[in-house]
Every structure is written in C-alpha cells, then in structure tokens.
Amino acid sequence: MTGFNTKLVYGKGLNHLNDNCTGAVNVPLYQSTTYAFKDIDGENKYDYSRSLNPTREYLENQIALLEDAKHGFAFASGSAAIHAVFTLFKPGDHIIVSKNIYGGTFRLINDYLKNLGIEFTQVDTLDLADIKSAIKPNTKAIYFETIDNPFMKVTSVKNVAALAKEFNILTIVDNTFLTPYLQQALTLGADIVIHSATKYLGGHSDVIAGLVVTNHEDIAEKLYFSQNAVGGILSPEDCMLVIRGIKTLSVRLDRHIKNAQSVLEYLKTKTDEVKHIYYPGQAGDETDQIAADELKGYGGVITFELSEDVDPKQFVNGTELIWLAVSLGSVESLIELPYYMTHAELPVEERNKVGITKNLVRLSVGLEDPEDLIADLQQAFVKASKKELVHNHK
Ligand SMILES: Cc1ncc(COP(=O)(O)O)c(C=O)c1O
Image (cartoon, rainbow, N blue to C red; front, side, top):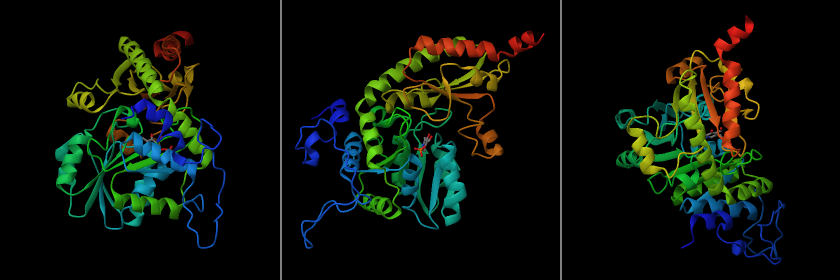
C-alpha cells in the first residue's frame, strides 16, 4: 500500500498516462486543444481538451487518490467547483447551509442560485438539532465548511453525515482549510468534498483552482456533464502548478502548523491587545474534541479579535513582512480584516449577526521564520496601540 506522501509526489504513478517515452520525471504539460484520430471510425480517449486533457486527468486522478475517492474533477477556481456542485440541484430543491461560509459562496447562493429557484436555509452546523429542525421534504443536501471561516470552529463531518444519511440527504463539505492531508472527509461520511486548490493545495499564491471528489457514480456523471457542458475547466498550465504544489503539501502544512503554534503562543501573551483567539482546539467547548477526533492537524489560519486599545486598520497597515491581502494557505503570511475584505460580500446585518466585527483579524501563517513573524506583529501592535497613538499625538 503506497503511503500518503508517496502519493503526493507521484499521484497514480509517473507512467499512468502510459506515454512517458522520454523518462521525464514530471507529468507532461499537454498544451493541445485537440487530438488526432487514427481514422474516422476509430475511438479516441482524448478528443478535445475541454472534455479531457491528460495533464488535468493526472491531477483529477491524484486528488481522487489522496481522498480515497473514485472520481476527481478540476475546475477553473474553487468558486467554479462550488458552482458545479450546485448544478446537481434543480428549482424547488432545498439545501441547508452553514451560517458561516466564505463570502463568495454566500454571494453565489444569495445573488444567483436563489434566483434559479433553489431554496436555502442557513443553520449553525455545530448544532445537530438546528440542522434537524431545518430539514424539509424537499431538502437534498447540507453544505458546510469543515473549519468555518473566519471563526475556525470545527463541524463534525461524522455527526452531520450520519444525520444526513438518516434523511437521505447529501453531505457536501468545503475542505479548503484542511486538505486531504489533515482530514479525510469522504471516509468520515461526506458524499462530496470541494477544495479551493488556490489555497494549501497550490500553496504558492500563483494559481486559482478548484477540485471536487466523490465516490458516487451518478454524482460523478453529473459533475462531469457540468464540467464539460459549462466548461469551467482548469487549464493544463494551472493543473501543472497544482500538481507541483501538491508534491510538498504535507511538508508545507507541517511547517504552517508549527509556525501557527508559535504565533498562537505569542498572541496569548498579548492580553491587553488581543481579546479573543479563534483556532481549532482553543474554543473551550465540544468542538475541541471534534477537532482532536477528526483532524490530523489544525492548519495555519488564526483569527483574533483586537481589544479596544488597538486600531485594527493601523494594525494591518502596520505589518511590514506580513502582506495585507486576502487568501490563505500560501508560503507567505497574509493578514486581513474580514469585515472589510473577505467577508465584505455579507450584508452588514449578516456580519453583525455572525460576529464579524471591525476588530477581527485573520492571519494566514506562512513558512517564514516564526521569530520574524512575531517581531512583525509586535511592531504592528506598537504602531496601532491607541495609547501609543494618543501619546504620539501629544
Ligand atoms: C473556504 C473557501 N472556499 C472557496 C473559496 C473560493 O475559491 P477560489 O478563490 O479558488 O474561487 C475560497 C476563497 O477564498 C475559500 O476561502
């Protein structure tokens, strides 16, 4: 049985495309839209690259292998992948969605899918009773992010999937924050797993990509139809970037986690500046046990709420090493204010309802030396201290 790290490096094996006649240690980049037929009656596995491209096929097989899935699909973005999954549903279908989801998914649901006649109810997926009370005769699926964004709370895939199965409802998870290295969501009971490969899987802030896996033949057929008919495919070059990123996924994530731990310990000492820290295992409630049971590690994203003594805008403007930017899961550290940036898509009432305040900071811890990250945060705290600002003004 091949181990996970070997699968990261080799996918299904270098020769699985069965055409490596040069000994190249990398999968070839098939920059071809079309493929010649031997004769008019012959059958070609590949005929046109929207339908199938060998480089994309390698990546799709690899993500399926990593997730212990039968089928994998690569899309032009995480959002395109999410859209493709929602094409499984028709007007009149009802879907239960977690109340804390990525702003772009919120926009897709509220400003597009609802107009197509698909119904949605938002619930707290940490509360099984809340999910159960939202189930209706036309409910077809429950959709959530395994670690919610930005509060980093861990929903149990196992418990939600068990409940969903009782009611014959699909469990769909966005596992972007964890990747198959830190959680095997299909094994825990999910029916469909989605990744924005733009984040940890790609890992270098140089490619926008989305991946989907499933074990259900009927769902796979529909996803393939959507991929081919709508055409939101990942380009061969972008597939190569994701393939390259995946090779180092476990090494990078181990380091992200180690660095996040150092930053977390530092933030805990900043009792005057930091009111609350959100990171799996730190909630002090039952989600800590869920995280311990279902996750192999907690990733590199930390959210924290600044106290009234710190000016949040000055703080994120003040970092010198850490970039002020959206996104996460890359080699470089990124900091942002969800209220103004990643979650600005949510109406103000919605942001207030879920607790996304102007003081909330999301930090994606990168692979730099942790001492440098801490020194950068420390000087940003000094610059943004309101006491300090008043002092300077005087
Ligand atoms: C959890 C999550 N899912 C999906 C997406 C969308 O992915 P993409 O930006 O690749 O379209 C994002 C983007 O930030 C995300 O954070």
